[in-house]
Image (cartoon, rainbow, N blue to C red; front, side, top):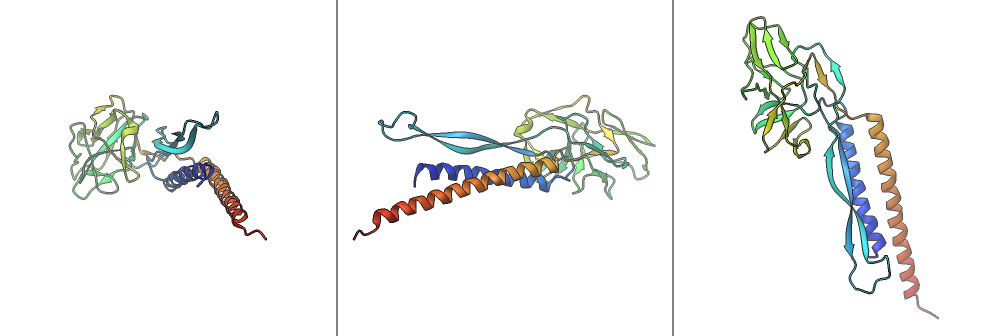
Length: 247
């Protein structure tokens, strides 16, 4: 296979990955607390064998989808009026919840009361306080107030302070689904989380911009596909002419 084809195929693989990432972003455009992912492309340089290559022809540059990173810009807030809906006001803060697999981080701030009086997310994971304990409220508590520093109170008085933590490196967080993250590194408390009660942070995916980006990626994919097809036809034509029997 000629170099032009292998280089083009490397670009096709990278563009396919870009389309997958864009599709995942679009699928989570309405997921609270979701942060879009972006691609990082790089050159993968391969030195050609032999020392008698012409000038400028000694290195082949392939396309490589080196990694993805999360766009950590804060999403817009939607005010719901639900007293247990909360949003972190700082772009680097995360709530902590207790899952069957251990403590996880999240920016999805839609919480509710469980039948047992715990404050939980939509899948039943308990919201944790600054001591790392699930927050429990009394059965008689009906009115809740949450201040900017995360202090949760009811008509009975102070209940707990909601934990908001900052990871050492947000890009090193490992996603689990579209709302939870895990990390092996220690986190530090956010002193002023600026929590907003009665609101949730929406996804920071902008559907129109994301769709435009996906269309650009698709056109690039189609262009490279046509190039590969044209090169294949050129090679086949050359083979046919070389193997053609002469009269």
